[in-house]
Image 1: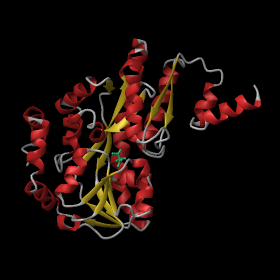
Image 2 (image 1 turned 120 degrees about the vertical axis):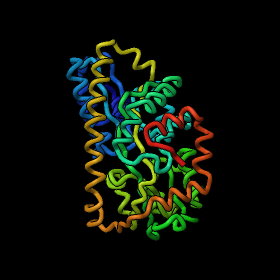
Image 3 (image 1 turned 180 degrees about the horizontal axis):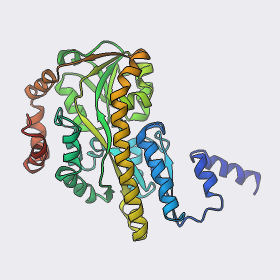
Image 4 (image 1 turned 180 degrees about the vertical axis):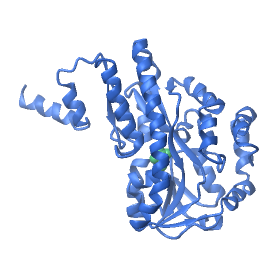
Length: 336
Ligand code: X2X
């Protein structure tokens, strides 16, 4: 190998995780696929998928070798969504709310205060509502795996003040992920939402482009957002999850037995990941408090009422349509 081609190989390799570089040496994988996530490998979303990839490699005798790219290594969520659509990326996890820029219905689980508890969330998402969303995703050149991964209930953090009532959200410059439903919700609260992909959130908060953001505690911790935020208000304003998506052609190219192994192992990863995330979201308040984040609780009814008065529920019922709305309501009861 000439010095120039070695340099080119090394430069090209900088985005590859070490394990994949080592395992590719002499690797006879028939299918070398990539799976990308926006969260660090320390978050159960990335960690459980890495375990699944190792099990899939073993169970297929190395025929399917999936390299994990956590922490937005392959770009922002917006970039990675284009990559998985074009086939440049084979597997990708994405919040249904962000996916709604392509598949409008997939934002439906983000309706404010829709779910009473996790039992309702997973009854809906593993049941008729999730099936409806996956069918819509399937129409757009993507495969959605059966069990959505958990992100959890989202809480508001700021560097400026605690949020006790909806009035405290007025005028707050808050980062939201790229999704019309998120923007609509925080406009309904009278905030000034800015859409920013997760890979730029830490610096947007650090440089005070935004005063606040909202995420489950497990994401706040994994992204170290507590380093650049002071207050955390337990609003529990929506439940969010990640669909594992595959490029349809790439998945169809796998032999049936390999597809079955992948489906089984990712289902196991999702179920284990949910338990991890629920445990983290329950325990992190204490640990983040010890690291200086100041917590407060709110009366969720006040926030729900503010959304109601701003016409949020009526607007989104109209957008999702009666059939989808009644499928959601069949699990959670009447929403408004
Ligand atoms: O971008 C976010 O805030 C995150 C990590 O929660 C999502 O993927 C929606």
